[in-house]
Length: 245
Image (cartoon, rainbow, N blue to C red; front, side):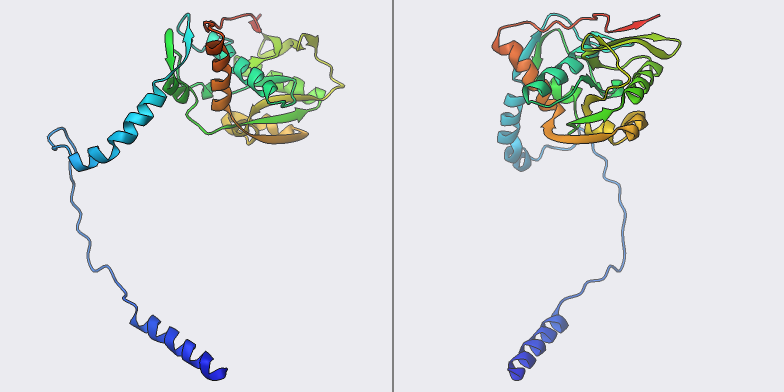
């Protein structure tokens, strides 16, 4: 048995000794400018062309039709409300428990066009792999949460209304009911925000948080599918959910 072990060990040492070792002796740098003067590499383009055609057919698929160009703004705007409402509705359809929806204004990366909305515009609007998440706050801290939104001049919300007055939130209502400081409230948002993204330090005060295996982009597409399947035109508007005083 010892003899076999010695043979194996000797063979391993031989293999290690016979291994080829390379070492860099010198480095030469050269700039290769890329311009239209370069001829196309047909072998490469022929390789990826079938994949590009398949991807283009998916990304150019019309996911909804809009009555207007949908743009963002503060304290609220059609794009803000569309995004937050899409979060609210799609998360409810997945039986996620929460009281109102919120996302960060900076996360709205582009407007949506009037007329046909191709799938790639939703990828431009939400280019990140952010997932749905929830955070539960005490009544006192949820009031501070609305002050956080008010101080920024307004952010996308759904299921809640309030007024911005001197940089603070007043007349706060959640699902039509005045805020109750003795009650805990759960906010639907993204994993990016509960991890403190975009100034979201307020989420460090959450009593608990949870991340779901459901992407925000999926939620947007699921929401738009309800309009397409019912032959409805998308037409989000400002509805006074955030007012300035």
